[in-house]
Image (cartoon, rainbow over all chains, first blue to last red; front, side, top):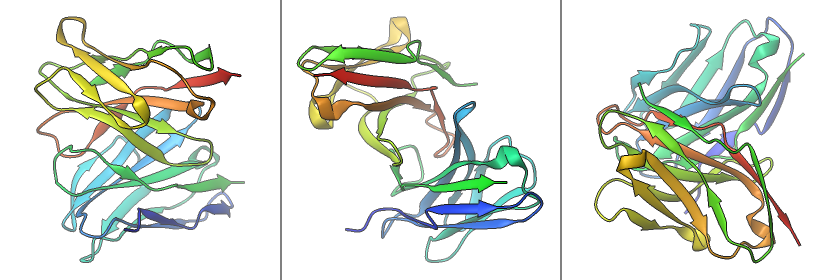
Length: 113
Length: 114
């Protein structure tokens, strides 16, 4: 069974641009969450979607947004990129809607120059 | 609010030696507790989880963890470390009624000496 697939794996963008990251969860998983991982801040929760609805949102500015489609695939978008947005963005999917443990993808490494 | 503390930033052990990674959490009730491992350039892999019941939980790769409510701890152990265990280890806590939002510790980097 395929795992969580994140595309692209690596991305280089310029300050001020916007970027869209994609996540395909494990087949049958309906919950998708996004995390930002940086050396300074560690793993920080961005948002969670379940059945196309955003259920939780972390403490990030409005430049960070996401959505989930009817097939449970999810995208996150970051507008007006800043140097500090450089990070590994991890997507995780879960079968159930409540804290039964994620399966993580390998992440998208975003570098903002 | 929930929080997780992993006091040890970096640990070095010899191959074959035992291992204990510390994790302390802050939460008003019994949380859901997890340990994840991350190899360089990779995502996180779930090692084990605790929801309720037996306080000693077994995970993959020979790892186990013990939930101690009185100490608000969920330490990860392995009796004999292998070189392939070198990685970053993260403890995480989730609240039972807040969906799938987790709070992660800052991680412990494990180095294994041959």
